[in-house]
Picture (cartoon, helix red, strand yellow):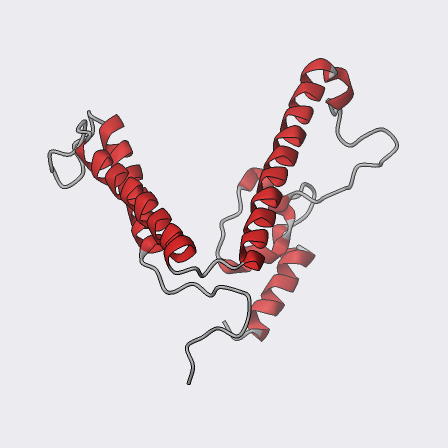
Length: 183
């Protein structure tokens, strides 16, 4: 069996860098939290609060990941020659698509911000529902009877006026469903 590739694409080898980088980012986050909460002494009474050393360990792991990962990419490209012209073209396409998506995201973000800052009268809702749309007549959640058979107490002020609570049709339906379910 030949180890020579019969295509123009480079399939990368398994790498430890995603795991090391995510662990470093988590340690850096936890270290930042400990560093900023110097008055909190609830983390097993360890002397970590107000100290930057956990953050610095995480920062070192992230920087180590960046250096090691780029070292492997350069080694695959230059030393091993795994980056064929097709791979180089697709790396350029990927970077171009990434940069353009970032530009589009920030244009949309700042466009919305400046539009709402300059033309604030156009974006305010004013009232809900908008004019011409009738408001939906939703029942009061306390008056819907399906939750009462589950044991939720009913507030006496929420009881429908003018009806006997024992003859409530929602309550009767809830009892029937409760009995049919075998609960």
